[in-house]
Structures are given as structure tokens and as C-alpha cells.
Figure 1 (cartoon, rainbow, N blue to C red):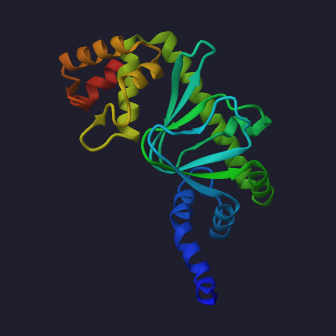
Figure 2: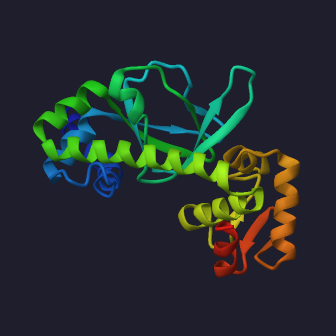
Figure 3: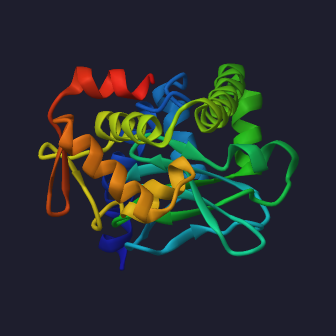
Length: 241
């Protein structure tokens, strides 16, 4: 038992190292020193979720901040009738749960793993303590909330001023820039056409027709489940119509 106990700190350091490295690259926690990052890792916990597993539920009490360490997630809002809209796609280094932390209100959306995903979970009380110790962290948190609000405002503007083809073109550009594999966006493994539809306020058949229209113009190529951008500049122009 003594030998096992003496090896525990080294084992824990090796386990926590990937989390510490990931936190150091986030816009929120990169203002911290190495000691601050270590303290943050020690204040939370890491958990891995499988494909399709719900990380947090809409309506749950919001008392934790989440950081995606690896994997991919979608943020989903569900109406009272059961209709769903995908608000965002989040990958490594991105955070969620900020809004609920501000006033302790219930979570405004659910977050679902699109693949095997590891997240770091930090309790609100520990985050506030870290902010008191590191004023720069509070400033970055406010900036993060501001970026989230601007993104939601932009989405509302897109729904009002862009047609379906323009919204889809813009979404494909955003996903490809942040999350797509080298061969392109893979549908039905990470995203489905229903996910795309939910993100731009359309139906699945309408998205399918819009994909085919973009493909007919040579802007993208659809090969089975893979969507590949063929004309980047052309797709950008279509996203601005």
C-alpha cells in the first residue's frame, strides 16, 4: 500500500496534464499562470461522454462551467412542443454554461456529445473563487459572455436577412473552418442533415435540396456522407447573398 500511495501524485499529474494543456489554450483560462491552471484543474473534474449522451439538460440548475477538452458537442434548444434547434457546435477549447452561471437560472439549452467527448467541469463556487484571486479571469469571462451574445444576435440576423441557401453556405464555412476533417464535413457521423436544418431554421428535406443546389453550382461536392467544399470563394459569396 505504501508504494502505491507514493506513486499517486505522479499518476495524478500525468492524468491531469492533458486537461491543464487544454485549459491553457482557452480564451478564458489562458490568462492564468501555470500555478493558476494547476489550481483550476484541481478544483474541477473531467468526465467522458459517449456519442449521443447528454452532457447537461435544458432546465437543469446551472451551477457548473464546462470546457470541451476533446471531442465535439452540439447545443440544442427544445421548444415546449418538442421541436429542436441546434444553437451551436462546440469543439476542443470551447466552453459552455456561462449564462446559467451569471444568475443561477436553469440551463437554457441541452448539450449533447456528437462523438466521444471529454469535458472539464468546474463548479460555480470554485470559478468565483478563482476570479477573486485572478481579476483577469473575470474580465475574460465577461468577454466570453459577450461573444456568445454577439453570436446569437448574428444568428437572428441571418434568419431575418439570408435565404436558406445563404444560411447553409455560411454554416458549412463555419463548420469546415472549426470542426471538419481533412476530407470534409462528415454527415451522419458527427452531424446529420437534421442538425444542419436545426442550425439554420429549416426542414431536413429543404436542407437536402439546398445541398444539391450548392453542389450543382460547383460550390461543394456531396459524396455519400461527405460534404467537401470545392469553391471556397464562391461559397463565401453565396453566404453573403
